Amino acid sequence: MVALPVLQNRPAAAPQVQPRSVRLSLTDRCDLACIYCRPAGKEGYFEEKLDLEAWQTMVRGLVAAGVRRVRLTGGEPLLHREVVAVVRFLDTLGLDDVAVTTNATRLERLARPLRDAGLRRVNISLDSLDAERFARMTRGGRLDVVMRGIDAALEAGFDEIKLNAVIVRGENDTEVEALVRWSWERGIVPRLLEVMAIGEGANLKDRVVTASEMRARLAHLLESGDATREKDRGPAGYLYARHDNAKKVGFITGTSDTYCKGCDRLRVAADGTLRPCLATNDGISAASVARSGDSAGVALAVADAWTMKPDGESFKGCTETSAKDVSMRGIGG
Ligand code: SAM
Image (cartoon, rainbow, N blue to C red; front, side):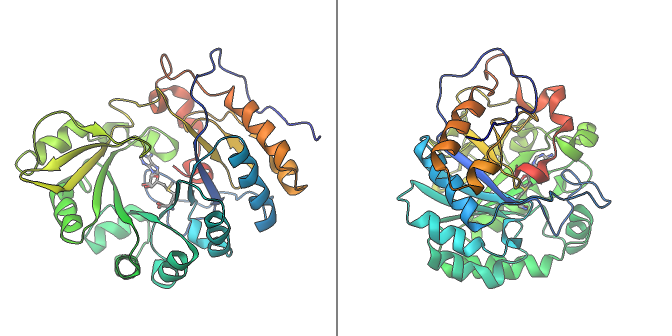
């Protein structure tokens, strides 16, 4: 078997939980450059990416290692030429979940083929309903294109559509209620994210809007009480609308209250590196085993990468200094 390079030092304690959920960064390319994610200038892209066959081996290995839920992300996953084929393959595996996180710029054309291929759920990143602000926050994105993508997703009839909005003080913090109402009107579940000090977000530390502040702005719309996490549904804490439990809002507190304890997520970067934590650059390359068709080798690499997972008790995720050196684009949020 090919030796697996260790990229950085291992933390002392390995966690008890097993990897159950994986985010595959199909490509590190993105057609937007959100102010909290990618730098304005051109970044280099990974030279060595996995082809469809290597991704299939990678996923077989992940499943052999216990993974049950797969989310495609990026970069922008819908820029990958074979994204529909990847979903079609995932659909054959009897997984508990197959989902995508996308900026929706390509969704108008791809929503139907992705749904037909077996995609169940879609998370759409949208920070503003104002075309000018949207262009500014994404450094050039077109809101009309994204809106057409969202309409196509609604028509395709996915099991669930969520909206992810990163709230930045002095930018879209005035739109918190509008984003929630707009989503509810369409049967979309809004989720409001604190800026995390990861990648470009590290430059926006003084512009973080905490979940408790967002919640205060929505107090007249929401039930009081504690936000609740949903089993196997990621880190968001949800609160329901007053007198209407068909509507809810998710809050993702990546900065004010990290949620590392019990994390069962693994990430695979577009170059085939297995990354056990969003907030560190630790990882192990499984690219060569995946390319050689060795899914058992991938499963071994997963076990090895998992020992690098921070303990989640003393480690505080994206508030750790290691986070600022991580590129979100490469590992998919
Ligand atoms: N291109 C896809 C998209 O736009 O959804 C997938 C990749 S993107 C990196 C995944 C998610 O990470 C998006 O919802 C984005 O808003 C979020 N994200 C990126 N940088 C972030 C940061 N510094 N803090 C909080 N969320 C961030």
